[in-house]
Image (cartoon, rainbow, N blue to C red; front, side, top):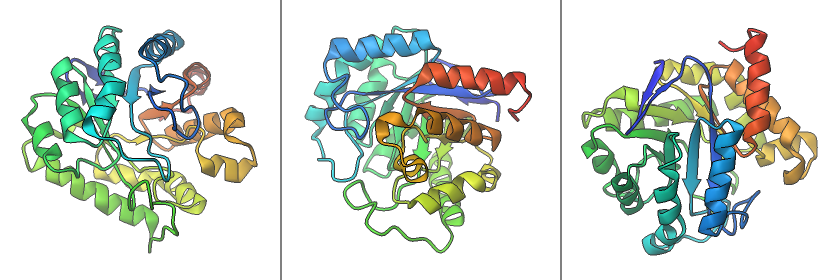
Length: 277
């Protein structure tokens, strides 16, 4: 598919799109606390748009291993006003949440995309998205939950397992009448996976494309890049760019990143060289 249907926008996927991350959290693994205040989060959103972000992704609950679970009210207190203001910035807006109540409130504001690390597994989440006439959705694979996902993750074949799971979640949504043009899939790099699992998912990414949906990948600053390079989280820009380019080369249509401007520039060079499928 070459279009991602969302609430207000039909996103053209004939070329790769850059999703900029805004974490309104004190404890995200690489940028926690930087955008915790509404004014700081909105300023971050505005800067990412100036840097060339095609989509903004705003989240209020950290998914790092061991992060505390927030109540609905705690999470909404972090993201509600940010989402309301960011809806005016002229780009598709995504909310990163796994709570159906947060999804409903965000959609009421006009948010375009639900980005759920639990793949709409929470009670009421599938029905909520199915009842909405047009919102986009990203279904992600995760083994376990954030508290336990990195405790000896294991798979007979990680690529096959991820593919089966995402296929099942896609079917659960389309069986409720949701148009497949509203759905993208995310293999969940770093979510219940070892560095070797993550590299296999990158090297064999083409196998996931057989599901027939656009792929979104998020390699930005991930620990696997630190494992490969030996670099701490604040020194992984080069590795993040390389992983984003590799993902796009293997067919990803959306890359979710912290460093938007360098990613946009790298993709422009890749495109000029004819290296983007």
